[in-house]
Image 1 (cartoon, rainbow, N blue to C red):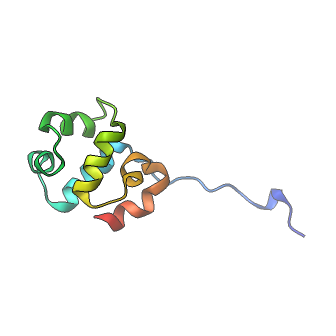
Image 2: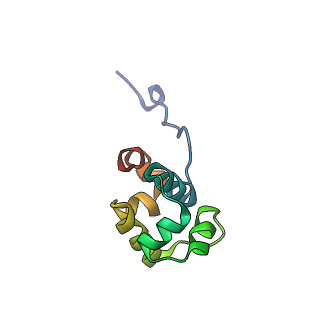
Length: 90
């Protein structure tokens, strides 16, 4: 009979930040920051700040980017939980 001692918790292989996800999705689409800004309605400077983790994303920005990328907002907002979907979204 197996006990809890027979099981080991899974460990993540990589941790992505929200900014890294935004950059990955943008690169996968072949878009510049300017193109993403135009498609999302965000300012180019904010795209750069988000990708570099200099500002928090917030709900409104998440929704704007998700709509531009054609993905669910959770993929952008919670990359640690949605990592397997990020590759599929690109």
